[in-house]
Image 1 (tube, rainbow over the protein chains, first blue to last red):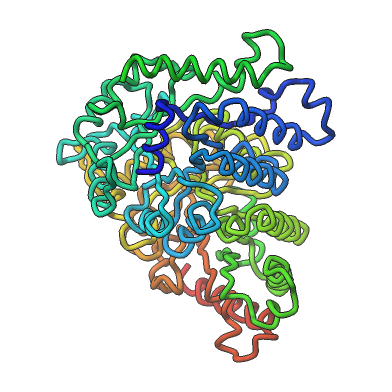
Image 2 (spheres, chains in turn cyan, blue; image 1 turned 180 degrees about the vertical axis):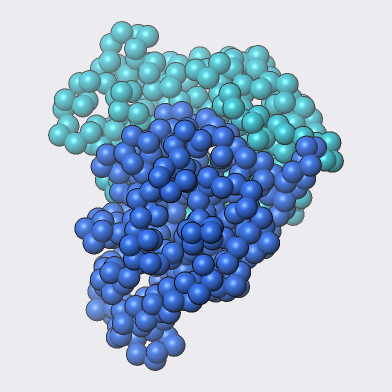
Length: 285
Length: 285
């Protein structure tokens, strides 16, 4: 996780900006300008990246919003990722991919390989180590990372993740334990392994207790802002050095122009929100 | 699950053919013929479909093997799915997708929507109902289905899935219980709901006991053939009417030409293996 953490350190900003181009988020004038909505999305994405690239460490494109447009959408994702890479940003492809053996290897190659489009990929660990090792191997080979779902931010996350095992721990805690074991040989100079975990801001107490109990696992924290968790809610996700978590915001940044009232100034509005978020997060770490 | 089951009934064949175009599976002469390997894959796929479309009910493209080629690969997937649809096949997109809210909705739209590329999608249920409902809603709206991972075929599947809960049941059993609850209002004329489960052939006893205990959940069964489970291993997956499971084979079909010795006759070899598999499965149901 060293590359991500050193960018967070350099930019003094523990946030990652989600690029989740829901069609309704795209300013109307951009959709009118382009015949294809995918072209409007690409212009929106690249201008957003330009507006905040010097301020943030990372972006997190949510693959579903590209995949919905089929091959055309994947092309927009590829161009967005390539542009962000040029700008020195760390790219977390949010795909929650999972499979085993050579199939997982194919996903890993696509996102984490030598020519992979991203620096990290979110992974669902339900399949056990067979479903994680192919991703981890690729991450080790190419200095990349993964984030495995542990305690997600949605209201029903507890339906499975909070169930108590015979052993007394919850499923999400067991997952963290497995992640610690699987990643133990990849701990970097900041003390974190190449296997991070997704832990939602919407369960601040669990976030804080997990930060305490699983010291080698870096967190990707969704749910700040629109999903209800504020800066106070993520305080417990940071370690004593102010690292330990990268906090995601998508809607608040992409839709910042709605508050400002001028959709043509969406990039300026996004930057303003990114700076506001950085300053707010820096008060709690 | 009615559309799939009626096709199984009509063709008297409970198998689904996995189209997992690993580059090494593609005959050398096809790779030489085309400049782009993606074009070789497309020709391979379409000819395979032609060879067995009258014999099988369904195909299962594994998305990772398309995604590895980026937007070009997704285009091959789209063309493969469109062609299979024309031929009247039921298409299970094996993507193991998972997310929540509008993000899950975007995946659902891509695969299960009105213009969605598939008839069913595999889904990972770790997120709880928030991660399943958007897929189920789309399935209900457009007469489609989903298959949620319960007990996967890989060696380490038990690492999480077989852990015992306080309540005494295993995580994979709890998952089956949730799937039964979530799908209960979508049971069709064959007695199965629109939420199926992935249950591996490599754990025949669990397959059989799950078939007995969760009567409304149709199974997608990987692991027959190369992963070690034979026809005997899937016997327990069928119900008293001979339905209850659709059994996947990928490698044995795609690589059938290697046994026959003439790579130019890959399509004929595939058909032969498909017929052999059908006849073998029909002896155990």
